[in-house]
Length: 182
Image (cartoon, rainbow, N blue to C red; front, side):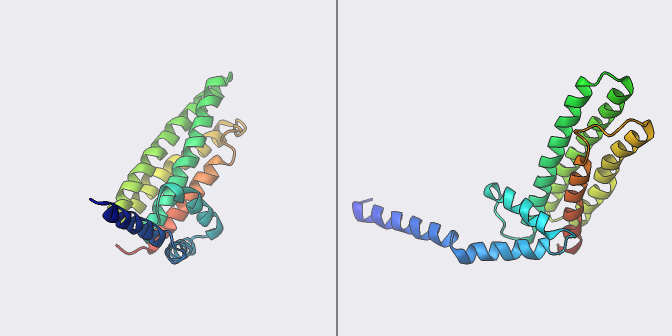
């Protein structure tokens, strides 16, 4: 390539980059996010989640918004799981240690469910993705709360509210999976 051809290639790359990052492309992405998050019960939280995950994941279609929501669920579940592991390790009460270790196991199953739901969503198997949420994720999320309630121990601080956040993430993903077309 000669100098003039190199200059043309550089200008072509700059032009394509500007086109991709143009306000009209970003506006299209935002319309997709607004439409998909609009079907959830808390669209502002959904939009915030998508905004937080977008630097690493582009939103080009409806399915991408669901993937972003599932990434939020994965991140929130990881915080919950990490908190439970630390709390169980430091607990001195045998009942607390036993119950929280059970929660660690539940949250590990939830993490597997998130990854499986992401895979099924990417494959456009939306009904199967909803089924994983209903049969694997929700039962494991609620099992920990039920075990804590039945044991009579107070809710451990790292778990307080965390399961509600993860369940909300999944609920929003499930609501979007209910309206998306395969």
